[in-house]
Length: 298
Image (cartoon, rainbow, N blue to C red; front, side, top):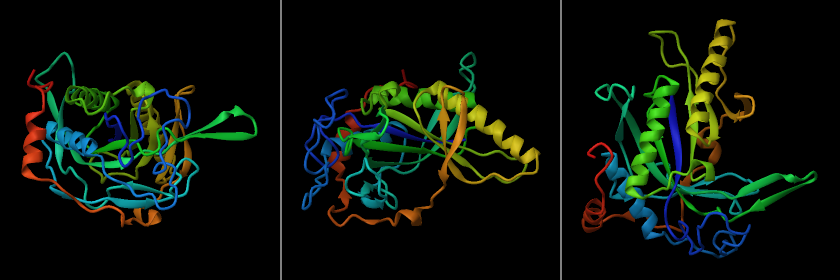
């Protein structure tokens, strides 16, 4: 099991625009010309969002990359007015780190280390609503351009309980640091759940990715269902296809959404509107000095 957690950065304005980020505002009331992708609009990085990502990396003992770069990830979707998302594929701001989890809360000495591969900063997309009118879809761009940290774990977890412990630990670190409020019910922290199964001693199997799961309980249920489903497929002589799936909280099951794309499908290239980020030592020292006592130390 590996998790890709999208954590919404705590900041008063968006990643590349001055629009507000408060939750629950009237639809489309917090959209600047940059977020709406009007022609000729240029993104400007929000220093506070970068600072929060660096502080988060420091809190999980991760490598902070003094040089990082933004890339364009191209895909057309109704809630992404630009037709591309500004993200970081090749040179993320934060590299390898780790999070220690207590596998059994009754036995705090039994600690397992889960690797974190990277944290990169990217823009969120807007929100589509399909259920208010039988023949129409509505789009709310308030969330479009809000800064996200994508925190990518290694596939080091082996049970729903370990994944639940990892998510709870990560959420408490984010809340201590103050870089994300961790309110999963508001969508400010969501997880993409990667699961594969194998026979003991075999190579890793083919994985599926279940998108945007928004509670610890649902993440654990997704893993339980998806692992059992994959075992059934293999036991019956089938093969697992790499694909993107959705979790249905009503039934506790997952269903296929689309076949899995690879990076080349998104035609990534360096964003020509943004210079690389170069972090100075004084900035890093300031970030480190601002960290509170963290959960493990406490």
